[in-house]
Image 1 (cartoon, rainbow, N blue to C red):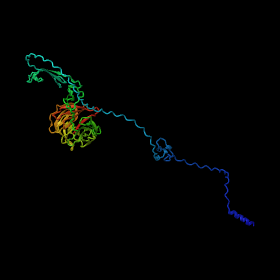
Image 2: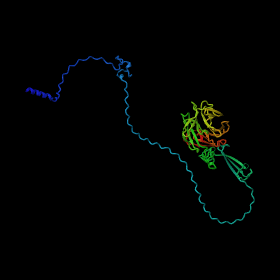
Image 3: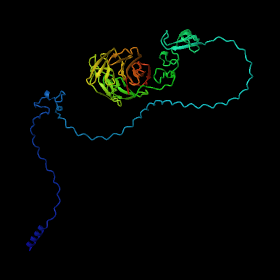
Image 4: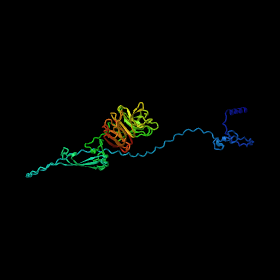
Length: 484
C-alpha cells in the first residue's frame, strides 16, 4: 500500500514541474593571482624620418628644408580638398545712388518776328479858309540879270591803302556847274568844272563799330556784328535792297575733324551742317584718320583719303556712311609719287566722270589716281605746299588753295597762271566748292572756329569772301565736303 502511494506521489511530482527560483546573491571576489614575471626588453623601433634605417639624421632626410631632421619631416601628402561649402545667403540690396546733376540749360530760342505796323490814324479835318487879301499893285519890271550857275562841293570816299592813307581817303572837289564839259546845271561836277581838289586821310574806324575801314564790310555804317545775310561781301546794313539769305549749298555740308596717325590713334569724326549754315551736328566716328573728304559726282557717295603714317604709309580710299560716319577701305595703299612709300594725299577731289585727282605731299605734285591699280600718275603741276584744299567744278576746272593763295588749273593742260594774285589772307585748308553755284567753303587753320565762304568762284575768279563763325565748342575741323 505504502509503495503504491509512493509511486503515485512520484508520478504526480514528475508530471507537474514548478517555477524556477530567483538568482542567488553573488559570491565574494576571489583572491588575486600571483604576478607574472617581467618580459624581456624589446628592440628600439625605427624613427619615421630615418628613411635608410641607419639610425642617423642624414642631410637628405631633411624633407621640409628647415635645417633639422625630426618628426616634422614625417608629414604625409596633403589630403584631398573638401567639397565646396554651400553659397552664403544673398546680401541686402545696396542703397539707391544719388541723383545725377541737372543737364545744361538749352539754348535760347530764336527771336520772334516783328509785329505788323499799325494802321494810319485818320486825317484831321481841314480848317476853314481865311479871307482873301487885297491885290497889291504891280511892281516895276527889273532889269535882266546875268545867267548864274551853282557852285558845288563834292566828296567821295575811297577805301584803299593809297596816298599814305592806310585806311582809305576822302577826295573833296570844289567847282562851278557851268557846263564847261558841255552839260550845265546837271548837279554833277565834271572834270572840266572842278576848280580845286583836296585829299584827306580817313579815320581808321570811320563808323566806330570796332572794325578798321579796310576790314569792315560796311565802313560807313556801324555794324558791330558784320552781318552779311547773302554773303556777297557787303554788310547787310549797306545793302540798297533787302538781302535774301543764301548758302550756295544744294544739299548738306559735311565736315571732318583732324585725324592723327591711323584709325587706332585718333580717328576723324564726321559732322554735318544744313544749307542754311546752321550749327554743326555730330554724326559719328569714321574709324580712320582722314585728311580730306569729297562726294564723287559719278555715284553720289562720300569718300575720304586716309592719312599716311610714317611706319607703313597707309593712304587708302575710304568709303564713308553719311548716316553713321563709319568708314570702309575700298583700296589698299595707293603708291605715292615723288615721296616713296604710300601717301599721304592731303587734298583730293573727283572729276565729273568719277576719276579721283589729288595732291601728293611727298612729291608736291598734282596727280590722277587709279583706284583699281592702286597707283597714281603725275599730271605735271608742282609747287611747294602745306595746308591746302582742292575742288573741281562741272567743267573739270580745278581750284587749289595753298595756305592762302588760290590757283586755277586744268587736269589736261596744267596751271593757267590764273589765281596766283588771289590771296585770302588766311591759312586755309580742306576746301570744297558747290559745283552748281560757284561757292567755295574752307576752314581756317589759325582760327579753328571760322568757316570761310567765297561767293562767285566761277565768275572768272573769287568775288567776295565772308567768314561764318562756328560755335566756340566746335572741334578742330580739317576738311569740308559739299553734297549736291
